[in-house]
Length: 78
Image 1 (cartoon, helix red, strand yellow):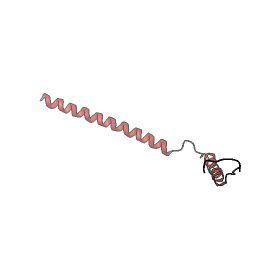
Image 2: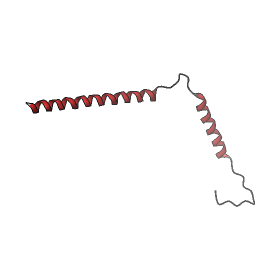
Image 3: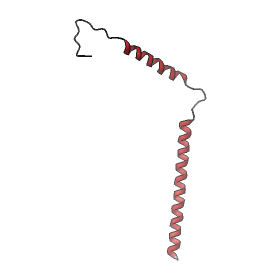
Image 4: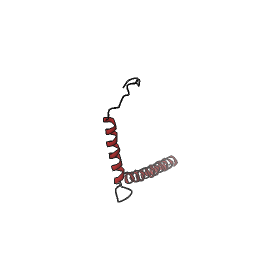
């Protein structure tokens, strides 16, 4: 009888620990989900997007330009 009570107590303790840990994990997952999906402010930050587009355009122009080679310069290869 004593072993049955101790066994049931251990099972109840394990069940409570499991429910507690799973509820903590669910709360953390919900918090991360809200943080990743909701914006911090109501107004979108458009200037960052515009800057990245302008930088890409400048980089593409720089890549398209042909480097000028001086006749007296020695280049290892291109």
